[in-house]
Image (tube, rainbow, N blue to C red; front, side, top):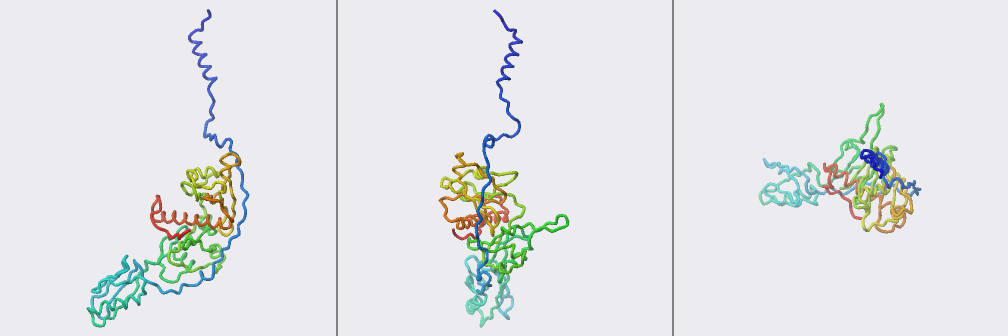
Length: 357
């Protein structure tokens, strides 16, 4: 009987083992990407109107009414040691001298002075009360994004959009190769009022001096000037974690939605909306995500600045759908910028005036 030497047997076993071992390529290897086909979308231009109505260009004629937080100086004329600085309390009252609490919220300074005078008559003979508004805190507007001094500003008097931008230090710029470059994306800058994006064209206003877009601000208006250098895709709608998804070398629709942990159970996947372009010249495309996930259609390549919006029901006219998408995008921008301004990396910790859907 023929016998193999132990050394030869060990060598044979080793060779057989090597012959059965699969060679795995080095480096990153994505099995899904190996067979996935990607296509470029065809977009449809959507007509939008961005000319402010006449009422937005009219200075508010209402008299300033006091509110919680407003700071005032009060003094009884010709009575020593009565000058005091006080403010409207959260309950709408002002507490001064011997008068106790006197309601100020909803009154002009003149009306409040009359009420305070009546309250002081029981302790002073014919008091002459002087009231002056020192600091406005109950009426304000927000301006965030690429301006030098983003923040919350008091609305002391009729204020235009250009005045607000000037008050915030102007547009944020950088100097490169001897030239000054604005870092704000004017084509996608917005003013939100009561949950609605006002039809203001920042490019026409700032670049071309078109004052028909220089609207007057109202209490709680939110102005946002995004960065012109941002590179991300906004994922919104019926997705588990709506977010801004970073775009590097490339990003597909499926990868983008995966970043948001997938669609919610009530998502309508037959008509995922992708919006591309600026607010004044948007383009839209519809993608059957269900068909993409089933392999019946190819995945879609996204671009920086795209908005991906997953609806909960079949959508109607593209124009009305675009309005909903922009409204969601505006809310997301307001919440994110508001939280960043407040110094939080977590969920927004302040309330931004959105209005209702």
